[in-house]
Length: 247
Image (cartoon, rainbow, N blue to C red; front, top):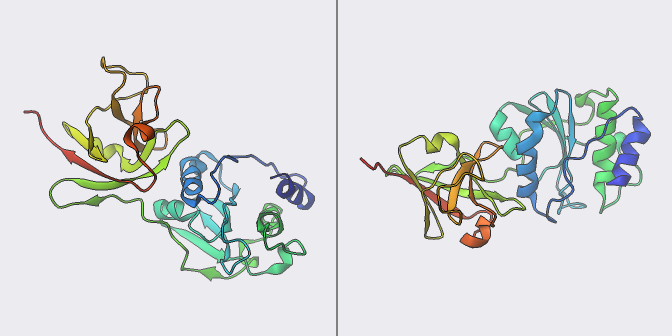
């Protein structure tokens, strides 16, 4: 937002600000967490990510700073950074308790401007992470990204994100498709076709298919159509991947 950029530049006029997205649905923490997960590795060491999807603003939810993967993440402690911490495993999280870095007065409805932006700006201006507050080890987490073995050779997963094209992004990875044949079941619909790119054709352009997307996760897609609409799918939807052999 413009006000947050103004606060950052007022503290550090040399800061370079890059927008990742302003299209996260309101209050959709998991969508924000996925977008961060999909892009943070493309940024250089020392990057400071400020994320504000904050339905708990003004409450007793904590404001946090996380050092992880050579980068920094500033925002609310509501799960936004949980999937990055899960992937990287090694991280240091701090409670933003030192109010001398906050803008005054602190709004109960816009802490992105009054807490997160000034902290990020001070960090970019050379303030050491230790000065912002104490280390914490009980971060709020979203449900784990790890799929679950069912015991009969199948893998239980879920849809973790649906993009604006209606592609259903799952928590399965390319390794889960390393078999002669895989069959994915979503809402009693079976999907066995696997493609390398969206316009690949096997003569049935209306078919649902699986594809490994740019974020490294298996997606369910349909050429020129919304797979989510075709499946009646939603975020959090359970899926089941089973394997079979045609021989």
